[in-house]
Structure formats: structure tokens, C-alpha cells
Length: 234
Ligand code: HEC
Image 1 (cartoon, protein in one colour):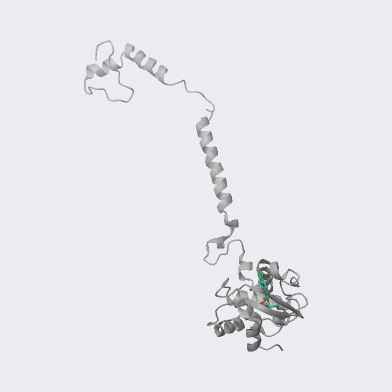
Image 2 (image 1 turned 90 degrees about the vertical axis):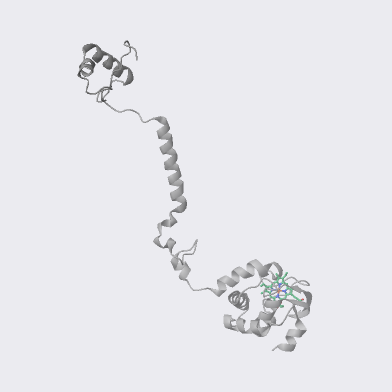
């Protein structure tokens, strides 16, 4: 360190040679004081009164943070319901709906529209020469066994319905088909038995379960003749 650029300690900084009285005294000399002040002037702006604007970068960061928080909150607010974290929460429903009793007619209506109406038609009248009617059909309103068995395994070959003979293929909704459970088969059969002009008693889940067990060995679709041999028309 040359003499010209003598080291000047910052205020509060211990002098490099602390304890050296001569050096300390020199540091507070007039000349040195002026150097210190010059340095301070150069390094720090004059303190001002009033507000300093928040830096742009910080504003953008906070903006993004609030935007993200808003999105997160909108997505995960759980409708502000305390029970959304419960184990029996059903998405899209409220607890009143979740506890509402199962409505077989409503369920059957939906199953019918999605699965049967394409062939048997929404009005249940079928299509002449292709799909037999369900409205007023003895296969529907007669013995529950015939109807449940048709839905569970399907039907093929000639079948007479309300004076007309059909000969097509009815798909299966049981084990070898769409594999509907007892509740859904009970719902679809009950709905069809009570829709349009039909007024037959419902078919319970228990009845469906019994019929299911009784045909466990049956593979492939029924023929009308097979069913009539088991359950003659009333
Ligand atoms: C792909 C078309 C098709 C679909 C889907 C269909 N069926 Fe059928 N269904 C038929 C055909 C064809 C017959 C006649 C079968 C025959 O000729 O042996 C039939 C016969 C029936 C019969 C006995 C005859 C009668 O008209 O009463 C019932 C009952 C029946 N279907 C109910 C249903 C139900 C309930 C559904 C929905 C779960 C359904 N079908 C879905 C085509 C279909």
C-alpha cells in the first residue's frame, strides 16, 4: 500500500493496526475525514423524505404470485365445504344428494335412454320388422324371470310379440355382456315395467339376485322357445 492511497477504515471498522495510537489519531485527521466524506458522498445517495417506488421486478413477482394464488384458490376452494375432505365425499354432489335414497325409476330411465332406446325406441314401440315393442309386451309385464333372463343373457331367434314375429339379436347385459349388477338390472326392468302404458309390479334386487344364481350355468343368448318352456306365457 503506497502512501498516496492510504487505507482509511470505514466508520466502526477496527483499524487494521488497532492499538496503534498514532494511526488512530491520524485516521481522524482533517484530511482523512474529508476523504471519508467524499467516499460516503460517492457511495450513498442523500437520504430523502417520502416514498421510494417499489421496483418493477418486485411488482411483477407479486402480481404473478397473486394471480397464481387466485387460480389455486378458485380450483381448490372445495365450495368452502368442510366435508370435502371426508372419506364419504362424492364429487359433484352435496351430502343431501349423497344420502338421498337410490331411485330405481330415475336410474332405469337413464339406463334405458343410454342402452335400450336405440333399438326399442324412446316410446317403447320398437321398429316394425326389426325391434319388438316393450310397451304392452307380455315379455315385459309378465313373469319377472323371463324379462330378467332376457336382459341378463340376450335373446335370439324367432320371437312373437303382440302378434308380430321378430327374428333378431338382443345383446346381453349380464355376465357375458355389459355385466350390470343386480341393482341396475332391477332398475331397468322396473322402469320398463312401469313406463308408457305398462303397469307391472317392480322387480327387486333380491329377485334379480335369485334369478342370476339360477342361471349361472347358462352361456349364450336365450331363444324364445327355451324361455317359454321354463316360464309359459300366462
Ligand atoms: C341392438 C338392439 C337392441 C338393444 C340395444 C336392446 N334390445 Fe331388446 N331386443 C332386441 C331384439 C332384436 C329383440 C328380439 C330378439 C329376437 O328376435 O329373438 C329384443 C327383444 C327384447 C325383449 C323381448 C321382446 C319384447 O319386445 O318384449 C325385451 C323384454 C327386451 N328386448 C328388452 C330390452 C331392454 C330392457 C334393453 C336395454 C337394457 C334392450 N332390450 C336392448 C334388440 C335390442
